[in-house]
Amino acid sequence: MSTASVATVNPRALGSRLVSAPWSMAAGVSLLLLAILAVVSGQNPLLILGSNAQTASFVVLVALAQMVVVTAGEGAIDLSIPNTISISVYVTTILQQGDSARLPIAIAAALVVGLAVGAVNGAFVTLLRVPAIVATLAVGFVVNSLVNVLSNVPGRGQASPALQAFARGDLFGVSYLVLFALAALIVMGFYILRTTPGLRLVATGQSFAAAEVGGLKPRRSRMSSFVISGLIAAIVGVLLCGYSNGAFLGIGDPYQIASIAAVVLGGTLMSGGRPSVVGCLFGALFLAFVTTLTNVLAVPAGVRWLIQGLIIIGALALPRFGRSSTS
Image (cartoon, rainbow, N blue to C red; front, side, top):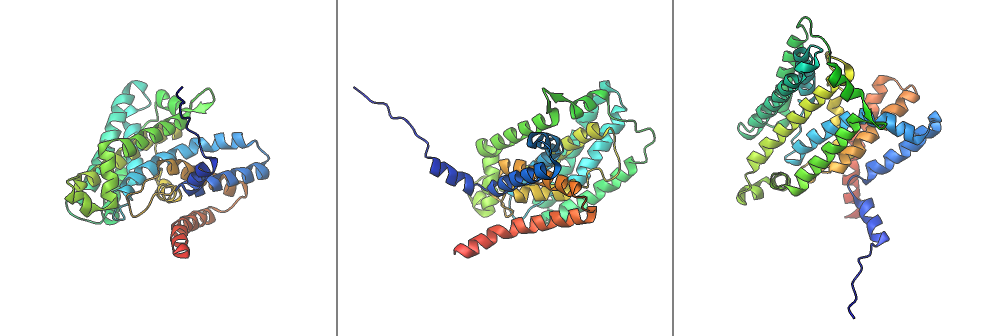
């Protein structure tokens, strides 16, 4: 008589893996902040989570855009994300003119703009060997100049009813934006962990020289990371157009520090090669809860920016402190 072996789950091992996960700190602190908000505001935690999830969805998306670039290694970072978002909002608004029938062409144009910005960033970094921070800052400045030109276009109109319905609507009480962000997390996780281009990107971030010797074409991977970042930023711009019902100067600015903070808090290694897709979710929720808590406590806007800056510094410093204390 044969016996079948039954796989068992070791709770202690599972708990150890969860605690050691790169996103564990962001997840734990997010839960703590949620509990604090529930006590301070006197509201149901699920209602607080629901109200924050919608705004956090935008941060999740920009964090994914930033994470892809950071994963490519060598301290790469995309500082043009907020400018790409802004110009995508203006392009979408101007081309649709409040008409749902014109929405497809408006979305297509915005995505092409995002791809173009990403391609230019990638060309500067991979072909001309310009440091990513310098290249994306310069490209972002040019894009911002174009945004200022578009802001003077007369009769820009507003978002179409169809786009507004998606950006502000829900399915059985769950925002479409939340569902879209969750779908984006799944797609990005599959891309990073299960596809050849994604695995090559991770290998490039771990060691550019080794990837080049191994014939993995790391320059192509780094180029693609900027293109993907530009595409995601453009998608955020389209969604923001519907959510805000139009365009205005500086609409993408809040996502500059948010994209970096969510990536850092989520556990993605800033030197490259170790992305944390799940961390983008918890990093975004962390920032959303911090913003809500500071609003409830009536903290001045300048202090809020200071708090976010200190959070980033702390998140960067903790891993180094941990390594030095255990060495």
